[in-house]
Length: 182
Image (cartoon, rainbow, N blue to C red):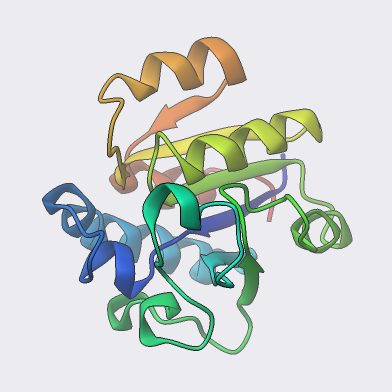
């Protein structure tokens, strides 16, 4: 296996802003651990961030949020991207839809995506679905995601996407044991 990390919507709007939840805040420390493990292993880290225009479809559902050009659409300071990381701007729930995410992953020979971020039952779910449709293996870090609506998201991911559910404190070991090719 060769893996990349996808960090979904860990932006100010969802962690510290108008659409923040207590659960989202709890994902910050586990996210740091996972990002650090991937960087230490020399594996790609890709941030997929909502950066909406006023006419994006989600505006009718959630109202203006994480708008392009405002601080709400910026990655939280606690896990800022580094120069070798990728930042993918998205306008829908999925990190794949209408973006270059698949091209980035394929250029690195990736066959497994490890996903962290917000929310497990919205943008993480749609990103995982599109990963499945593109034939990637899926791993979700349960303490580095939060759910807004569906608190039973794990069963869905396992049954529908064939995802492997792990914890942040397992990632460094998984990477070091060559269970995922670097």
